[in-house]
Length: 584
Image 1: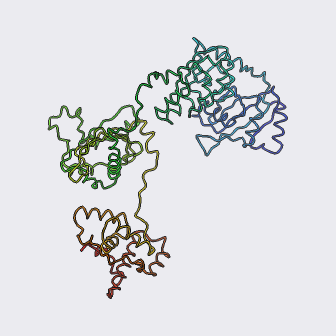
Image 2: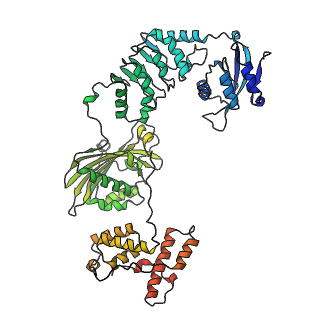
Image 3: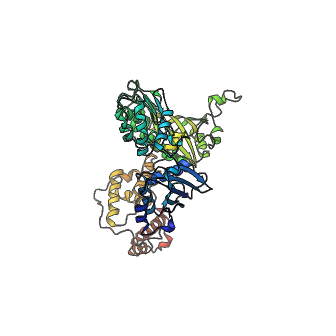
């Protein structure tokens, strides 16, 4: 080291260091040597320098003569960088490593390492030569500018100051097309240094454009006719329609987006996620699909048995789509085993309807053999292509999971209204394929549906008679039968109503259950159907009781109170079966 050189390291950090740096490093005639530690061999040079510069931003630092050193280090030189050195010292010479949060990138600096003339680096002349070399036919190609082999210093265009520095050499060239791909640029305001009527085409592939707001500076070029934004975050953040309309709003005279001519787009109908051939079909499609897929994704799919006509037909087709990330990992064997694709069956020697399943019993057997699934309801696209009062055809597509595997699907339902005025499935076609890249990336972004437990246990006297009164108003049952049904299902209103509906449809409720006794009024002052002893138990054991055990205790107490009132000598422990409360 030279006589006026000094070491800035973790060990030398102290109160007087900052003052020494300000006093002795302000000389623009010296290079400072930066020694980088804790960078692995597989880290690219570009990554190391970008990490350092991103940490220092907006403080300026221009590294030159970057060289890898041993296995875990690198060195470079820089001058006129007192503010950058001070910022590093204030952070204990450590920079967070985005690839390894446990190990920071550490730096040691040799201030005033050598005079500037030791390494004759004329960065301005160097950049000017490179810019001129990359210009031709009114096109300036600045793709991956920082990786140019002739560049003597690190000049990253994602730094607004560096981008402005380079634009000063581009101004006089008056390019009509500019290529800025693969530079990780986020801020484009330095481009406004160019003439307003110069650019008609700009290539911004593989940069950091995340919103339309980032592109506002480009409105400086009213003659802009073509823009390329492929592989920018904005392409994933918005759908295709918003993407195109957003660009056209910014640049009304734009003609080509990502290589596609869009001048005729206004004549094309806007795409829609869902299609309804009739406005009256919306409620049917929503209710049917919500119920169907909720039940289908349960462990027990037998509940949808009654949704199918007795003689319903069902078939499956499937395929593997090449070129997707799921191509090799997808396992469709259980679907290929029952595949009725016309292409795969065209040379079959057996009956052509071998895999056309008839009857809801056979269909349920197929569903039971298929693995447990979960469909993403937020990514479904639905078309009701035919609808009358008697029939409907619904086509729905989307993505679902079986364990860790992602699949795309399309289901075609043909519905028929039966004599009970209820729609049932008479024909269904299921097509399954390995999920597309976009489906894997954009599906299951929202949390899975919440599994609701039973309603809170009624505890106060008022809550019991309010439930009974509500149940009577809905079902039109008399007071006695309302109370019996509620007690049978532990005052769970939802479960009680479902069971009432099931019994009513199957004529299992006697006629006398609907005969109202006008002289009998609901007594709002009846005793709470559980004792003070039960209340004290639940308070003491609150954290240990499950809902099932609490309901069992409630049931025992209700029966015990009833038996005691009738003059019977009954032990609570013997009354633990609620099945005695049946319809008479």
